[in-house]
Image (cartoon, rainbow, N blue to C red; front, side):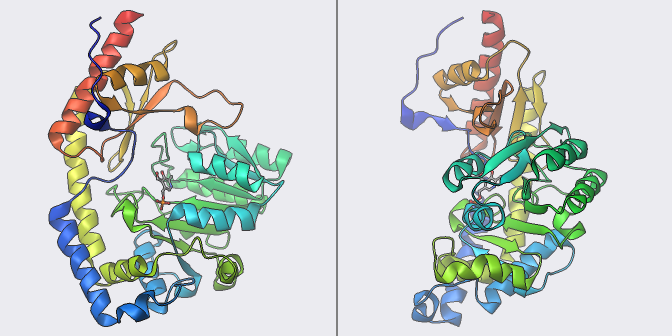
Length: 377
Ligand SMILES: Cc1ncc(COP(=O)(O)O)c(C=O)c1O
């Protein structure tokens, strides 16, 4: 096996992230127009002179139309809260709905910031076994009987990291368990806007107990730092978020909220999402033949690939080999719950590469390293 020289850090291609691809030909004019219109409809002092609290009426109405894409109909804007991204919404919800000493049910491999928040806020995350469609309703019911979790956090579409999407029947079965054990659901639907088709979110089927979060980070732009949250009712939105008068860290920066509102009002959000979808179709097309023969799990619109490695192999070993070829990929380890063994699998983001050439080069590095790893065994 020949040992490639390690490239300098600046030349590394970072495939460990799940950012959507940049689509400047569409994004830049749409964003510029939304920003200019936001600034001409109100004065700068009106926009940034005060906190946005749960969002202005226009923000919450825009959030209602943005989430309507997935919910089927626009929710009452009174249920909508504009937040500084999904993670900011978590800090309020996990503190308020779960809290110190309580249990939060999560997928057996879960989004790592949830584990960080568990440590900081003092709640206990408990994993629910998954199959190719996400969490198993029977395993959730068993956890409910044993540990009485206060809430369940999940991604029903394109789960991170496995890319699993729940069928409609699986969603209904999970809701049935949640109703039986009076479980609140925190549904993070952040990857759901890119697939052409996906079943309705749990929030559309069980609005009475679902806290629905639709961030823009994975379909429009991560740096906007905007996520729209839909609470079960206006009163519950207020109960969890009006303490905002005493804490402001989760609130959207007003200029970003105003720009996002205008972007949605003028339909620019959909035009950007369409451009990202088109670009992702091309990227999947590039990647597929290069990784032919590997155990790749992904789906239409997914921003990443989940590659399961053969028995006895090491994900960190493969990541190290790939790194020597100048490419950074992630492993399953950060997604595993404390004390649990992570599967030998790697996560490869395909949206972040700056060009098709870069994407192709990175994928060839992964395929070559994978081949080297098995030759070395
Ligand atoms: C499952 C999941 N939720 C939320 C986020 C980030 O959301 P935000 O930037 O809105 O905080 C990510 C980004 O990696 C994610 O993978």
